Image 1 (spheres, rainbow, N blue to C red):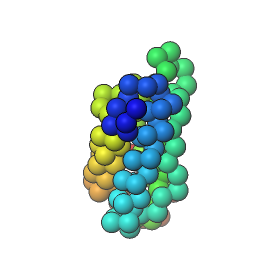
Image 2: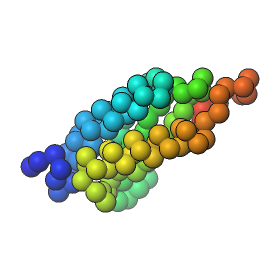
Image 3: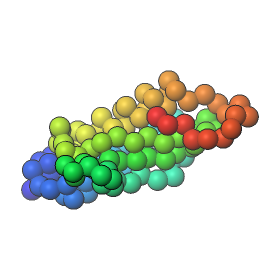
Length: 111
């Protein structure tokens, strides 16, 4: 099975390939935008009978802790493409939704 066609396997295989590509893309985003990656994980969505899997990234950006969560399984694209889309959407949301910390309540920004 090639990386581009990991979606033909099960959620475990797809998730492994997704994480490999997403980690590279998110690290690159952090380097370019001055963010600090805390974690990138994938886990089953609790209570979803279809076995959905979501990826969650936690990072610090502009003095704020940010959380981005997005479903990745069942797949609509090959894992490498899904990882690129994931990083692109996260970057867009970071740039449009996160304001510098201003003494607010310090709660994480949900992207």
